[in-house]
Image (cartoon, rainbow, N blue to C red):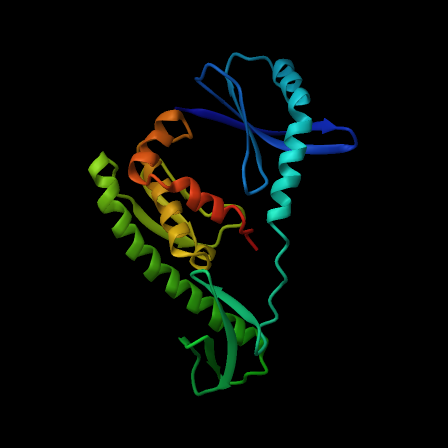
Length: 240
């Protein structure tokens, strides 16, 4: 389904609420407020802009309340300082950063510690690079493993196999193109495994349905019956 996307704002009292308008070949208008604190409006191509604005003004109170409620689940993360004793999260578990001097940079988990070795532990930039590189390596390994696991299930329902890309993303956990290119956010490796599986299965289903239609959710439910519980956990995590 081909869509046209533009951005605009709706006024609610003194508050301006930005939204993305998606026009497509559809029958009804739908407003979606996502856990990423984004507002998406899906409208038929032949609906006048004034009619869309009128609907949004009627729904503005609900949109604002929903955004505020979701915001309570998403406290702003504290910027990392990359100093010894600081907490880092991997697969939903917390690890304390331990920094030592070494001939070359390395990072690995030992017990409840993320142990990092750098030439000069006083150089925060080197520590950060080492930690970031470790997260990326882990993300590639973990995502491939669980993509393989999820695809075994999804393939039974005619889902196409995607190519995997891992990179940093500001607002999304993952995405999938019509050419079956699945992109996963490297930060996803910090959340529990069952949430990673949810994002992967969600994106796998997008290789068949490139929208959030009833058919998409029906396929997702067949592939992962408990996806709502997994999503509920993930919705309480905010991207840093």
